[in-house]
Image (cartoon, rainbow, N blue to C red; front, side, top):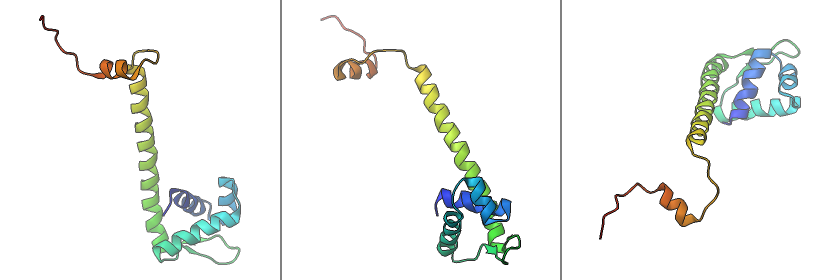
Length: 118
């Protein structure tokens, strides 16, 4: 199960149409159809009632997957934001320095030691 497949599934469910979902995702309808079929094969269920040109509807399994997909994609987005935020904080906390020798860089990262008189 791939995130791209879940995004396609969510869009098809929202649009009630493979054609509209493909348009919204800026890809070919065959790509979206393939992603949905891949999800259905992986899960061993049918996710949509397909009735010709009528709007498609989610099956019971599709309803459950949509709920979980929303949670998964929301969690992925929040996690991505948090990771970027941590990275930005680390960058802003670092003092500006130019590249030095590896030994000097290690020394700068090592804990401070008290100097003792010999």
